[in-house]
Image (cartoon, rainbow, N blue to C red; front, side, top):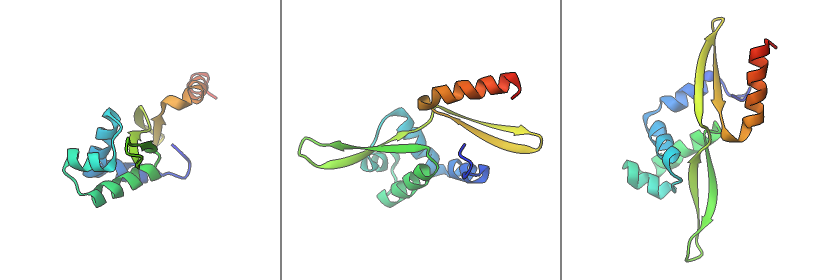
Length: 116
């Protein structure tokens, strides 16, 4: 977890029912906001608010695609593989595992194993 993100912020984000539904949907497939709204039966403003919150916490990313007619649109994707919440010495920690940080994950694992 980034140092500027508190456990409370992450838990509040994933504690929101609609945010969890949006996150689950984009973990299965890249979807546009319109597709998310249709699939989850949510209004577009609700979808965009949840996507904004999820992006603020780096749980979702977006990329722009070009349709056959030349129009541009964004699709959203889950930005992590798993999350672990642990309690150590009366302090909660959140660790978010991402595909793109494999070297960092190996370093963290090595540090944990070596007691560094």
